[in-house]
Image (tube, rainbow, N blue to C red; front, side, top):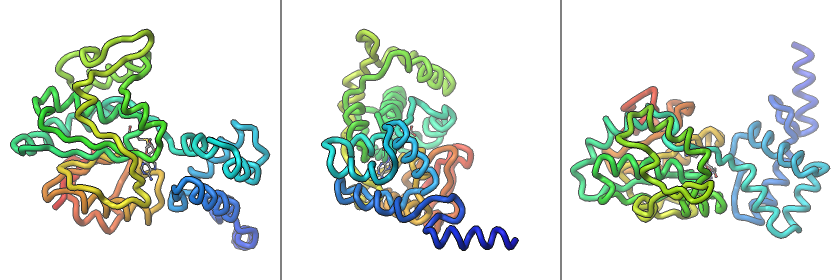
Length: 289
Ligand SMILES: C[S@@+](CC[C@H](N)C(=O)[O-])C[C@H]1O[C@@H](n2cnc3c(N)ncnc32)[C@H](O)[C@@H]1O
C-alpha cells in the first residue's frame, strides 16, 4: 500500500503516467511538434498504445530516443510523413469479421433498398479493402448503381493505395476465405484481374468511391449519410475523443441511419450512445434513434 503510494508520488514528480510509466512531458513535446508540422493532433489518442508504437518506430529507425525523433521530424524532409504512416495502424483486410457483413447484408441493406440514393461513409478506411468489400456486397445486392460512397482517412499513403485498388495477390487468399464465410455469391476473383503478383480490383467498384482526407480528431462532419462504417479506429482514441467522434457520426447520420464499429470495440459507455440502438450486439451494428 505504502510502496504503491510512493511509486505514484515518484512518477508524478517525474511527470510519468502513473499506470504505464510513460513520460508525459516527452510525449507532449513530440505530439506538439507533429501537430505544428503536419496539423494532426494525436494528443487525444490512447497513450499506452500510441507510446508503444512510437517506441517501436524509434527502435526500427535506430534513433537514440524522443529528442532525436523530434529533431528528425522537424528537420528531415518526409520524415514526419513516414512517422505518421507508421503510428497510424493501417492493418485491414476484405470482409474482416465475416458475420459483420452478414448482418449488413441481411439486416441493414434491406431497409435501405428503396432509397433513391444510399450514402455511405467509411471513416478510417485505411488502404480501401473494407470499402471494396462494401462495394462488392452492394453489387451482389444490386444496389451498387445507387450507392454514393465516401471513404476517408488521415494517412495519405494509405489513401493513395486505396484509390488505386491494387493489392498483393497473395493477400487475396485471406480475403477470399472471409468472403466464403459470409456466403458470398460468387468468387472474389471475379472482381479483380491479375497483373503479375498484384490484384487490380474492377473500375466499376473504384469509380463508386470518393476517397478523401478527413481527420476524425479535428475535422467537422461534412455530409449526411445512411450508413457510417468506422471499424477498428475507436480503439486508438481516448474516451474524450471517442465521445467527440461518436457525436460527429450522430450528426452525420440520417434518422434511422446505421453505424458499424469494430467487433472488439464498444461505445456503450459513451454519453452519445443514447442516440443509438443495437441491431446486432455481437457485430456492433447500431441504428440511430
Ligand atoms: C486499423 S485501421 C482500420 C481499417 C479498417 N476500418 C478496418 O477495420 O479494416 C485504422 C485506420 O484509422 C485511421 N485513423 C487513425 N486516426 C484517424 C483520424 N484521426 N482520422 C481518420 N482516420 C484515422 C488510420 O490511418 C488507419 O488507416
